[in-house]
Length: 503
Ligand code: 5AD
Ligand code: SF4
Image (cartoon, rainbow, N blue to C red; front, side, top):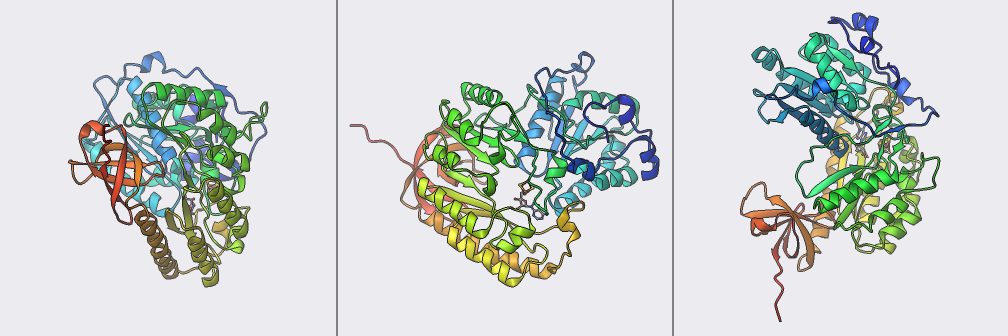
């Protein structure tokens, strides 16, 4: 492990290691155990990011491709990496054969996410034969895992570079090392580094933008690997977030998604000011931009002040993603979620009372160790009680290094699958019912682009985040338009433009 101030070049380069033992001689792999230790030292905010002079032109005439897996945080990290590569002169490509740099920005949340990446990495072998100068890099959450780094070292020799979630700002230097050393370059800090402001970003599209408000997670839900792969909770300074949103508004963006693993803990680590997510939202709502959302919430930290501010509406949209994970207080306790079923339902009641048209969405895990049929039934009944607009549902997947992985994974695969199907029947029914209730209503839609299947149809989203298809002119892309909902399916709404009658 190199800590944040110890990233010396001689530590990070590994001379063609062939085995894990060989590797360990040169470099200590990332450690989930070390990552769990939360230090008291302040996280510094650095404002002086720059590309080293000798790397500024290095990408001229060269191409890069970034494959992104997992959550919106990863998508946004990829935008930062793309921004850095563009500043180095590289051009984006979708063609693997044309690419000189391919980065896999990976996700560790469930085993199947990891399997997918290993499968793709395997396919990359032939590309190296085709283009020996190709630099193949692995970054993101998987690279924070010791066992993943060891597996790549022993079986994926086509990989040239591995770097962690805390090392993105070092991409130019790492790329230089990978290009010129012919050795596998590895830099994964187990401990989070500083907050680096002013990194360039190559944002996808010019309608919606992601903005980080905090990094890391200190919740340590027992099933989850994120607190280990993303480090401790660190909030960006409010003035930096506000300045970024203002700048995006000036550039003409219409919608902002604020990002954090647990956005409700925003500000708790800022020692010099008493400032929370409610305060931030209250400031942001004064900015002239049509829509602001945030994700992801933790019910435990969702306070009354935030609800009060969200109820003011305006550009703060009425959609709240509120992962519940389970409807059973006993399971929630074993998950270390730190709330009970009743406390969650009370929070939902408060939100619905303050924001009556709020659309609630959630995440649910089935088959957590020891989950009984009765406890699963409690999840079903909670879903019926809340009536979610949509839900992301998952089968529990043990993650090595987390406390739940030490519990007996007692629910057989078949039972997990069966519960998932039964749960989805209920969540889908609610999605359909919520959508059907919108038929005949007129709602504001932000058009984002063509529909995937029909170029004559535009796809957009309501304030509540619902997908709407409308046959409309392309000039409306990027516009907020009133649409009457004419038809509703489980996943999509159909509508027509409401034309105002001139009088
Ligand atoms: N197994 C299954 N689902 C998980 N999630 C997080 N960790 C696991 C796991 N080990 C789900 C949670 C979380 C979402 C992003 O992924 O529901 O909210
Ligand atoms: Fe994982 Fe829980 Fe943190 Fe969400 S709040 S990232 S589920 S540990």
